[in-house]
Image 1 (tube, helix red, strand yellow):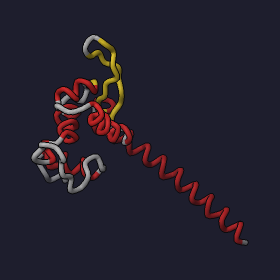
Image 2 (cartoon, helix red, strand yellow):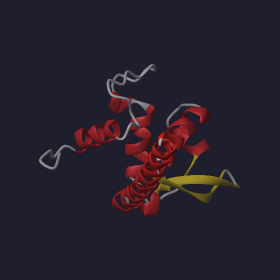
Image 3 (tube, helix red, strand yellow):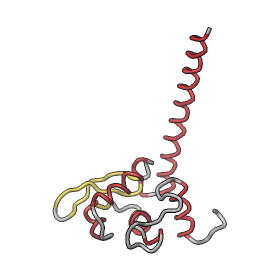
Image 4 (cartoon, one colour):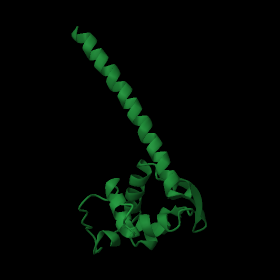
Length: 140
């Protein structure tokens, strides 16, 4: 992907690779393509264009002309990968939970995600090894 100069192609590929947008995604809305879809626009037009800004769900729902549950569904996918962090923001005169790219930097956010994945894999490895030894001991 390093040879590809088109930001949208790289973004679409990345978002499919991490499972945020399913491979072969077919928007069930009036969106004509993946790039016109709510999840893509949420990520690219809001989180990536303004990485340091925390967005209230209500604001995102209004700007993307969709529902709060739809916004939460996509935010939760990104949160589950540790790519987003929550920060209190003011919206319509009230404090709300806002979301932005972790650390305001996608590379740093990805490093955080990668560290968590590596830690989980090490834990899985230890558990499998322990489980194997217990199963082997029981067999003997």
